[in-house]
Length: 102
Image 1 (cartoon, rainbow, N blue to C red):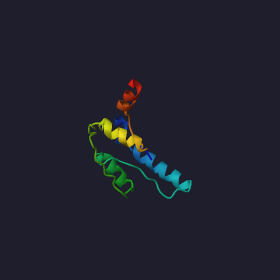
Image 2: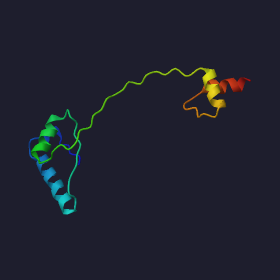
Image 3: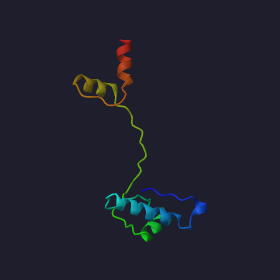
Image 4: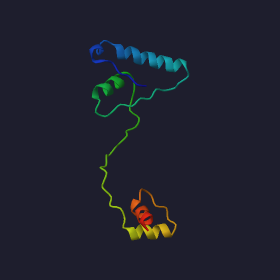
């Protein structure tokens, strides 16, 4: 379920009516639950959903990792890997350039 009420209509019961309608519709169509996702920082939505009978059942944790620059392996390492039949992942233009000039 996704729910958004424009700021100038908040506090008028619109979200309550939309949520009640969604719960009613789901029940009439044989669903046994409604799941939704809300960010940990959206305190207003979390309070609204709790007040509406929803309860948290899990948490999703995230850690962002900055991409680190990776130096390509040396030509001799790639050449040895290629000769032994290993799969080289990623661009290895330095090998192609050597072959095109020879």
